[in-house]
Image (cartoon, rainbow, N blue to C red; front, side, top):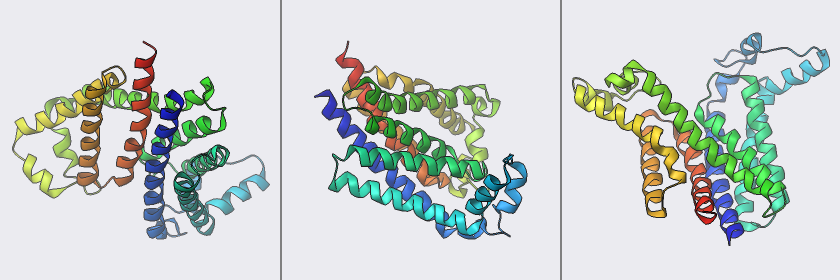
Length: 277
């Protein structure tokens, strides 16, 4: 029973995470001009701030991979891997080895992209790396083993820890405590929203409610692992609405899907803890 629930949870994580990766890769391919030699994220510029290999032959391979043609090929391969995993989820859900190998390949893609540049990344990239590491462990280890279970536990633990760290950082920030942080973010060019900025402008009480709601949600999310099932679904629903709001206001679509993908693992660990009480 527990193993079948774990398998269902893992499949849901795979599906949502791969949808997020496919969306992210498609967006990057549409904007591939920024990776050109004269683009904003050109490897000719970025490599200045990255460590160089002591072996010239190895550095040449890295340069070939991260130059425009090589990097676009890497993005296409990333998209193809996500599509392959989605196909497996529906056509061959019992192919554990194939899932594990492709999850490990996806993790390599994500780490290579982080190696190329830390610019242009957001929390989604880190969370996707966490997800595919956990899924690779889950699928490559023997079914029902402690090692396999650890893969899903790792995803859930990293999720609640991410919220806790984010909430703690906001609690220390004067702008968040005073209620001006969200209004300030909404006025920025990259992540701003003129409608939301207009609503918050001159409404200090509304700003404080919004900021403190985020802080309280992030600090208390860790309780999702211990509450009963009805409270679990309520907390996860609040999380979905929270990230949907961020996606709508700030345009962080893959960020929404990256955290949503972890929720089946969170629900599984909640059930696991209740099972062994």
